[in-house]
Length: 150
Image (cartoon, rainbow, N blue to C red; front, side, top):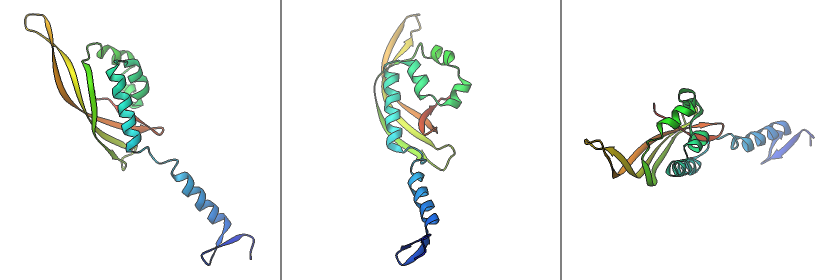
C-alpha cells in the first residue's frame, strides 16, 4: 500500500485530501454564526440590564458597534434619563435571517412597564401598560448585539 494514501470503503484516498476534509469539517462549526439559543440568552441579559436601568452596561455590552458610531455613549445615556420602569418581560419570538451578511435576527419582546405621563395641569402621573418591542439584532465577532433605531 502506498504510504500517502488510506483506504476508505474500498476507495484509495490521499492522506492530504482526507486531512483537509477533516479539518474543514471540524472547523466549519467553529465559524458558524451563533444560533437562536445564543440569541435568546443575549436578549434576556439585555432586557435584565434594561430592567435594572443599568444603561452603561446596556450600551457597553449589548449595543451594536455600528449603532455606537451613530449614537455616542453620552447621547445614549442622556436619552435614557426619562425611561419608563420595566416591570417584566418575555421573549415572544426570535427569528434569525442567516442569509444576510452579517447575520441578523428579528426579536419580539413583550414588556410590562410603568410609563410616566405629563398631566395637562403641569403635574405627572404614571400608567401601567403592556408593550411589544420589536428588536433587530446583528452578529459581530461571533456575538449578538442589538441594533438601535434612531
